[in-house]
Length: 205
Image (cartoon, rainbow, N blue to C red):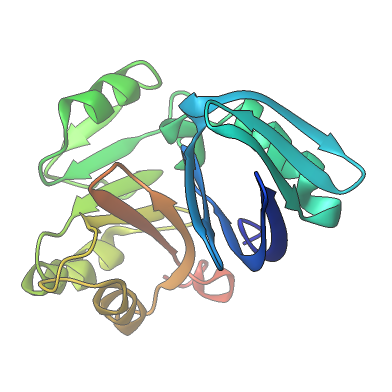
């Protein structure tokens, strides 16, 4: 997805090759040493000759990431809002199936007024479904039948829980005939996984 790279990093007197991950609000590096750099701790970000140079409160960190340097720099300087990452267009028809935090509801309200709760109409553009445990995923077959066209289904589930894993969500979604296309960090505690109807099946679904 372009947000995970094997690269070399220079930090203070340390140098290492490892894996860099560009997350929603931080950069993580795992190599001979580990770094977690919140965007809030970055004083300046520059892309120079294939290097991403981050001046942080802890010092200068240089990521040698080649052609991705400018793209990563842009994402750090101008991070997308959660609603933008979830692909909710202004005025979109949204269905909320489950309980959602007040912050998300406020963001959604600022983007569209066409929000229904506990029911997904057939002309819905985005469906958000919360699953706290594997057993909740049994609802997906019913939800999938209510989808049409390019509608998106986002399954929102807790991070790092044994009760429900990414593989559980993927398996349940694929079992209904939907295609998984994207993963987004929904919040500090939850992940959102996006499913759509495969293009070839949209006319007959």
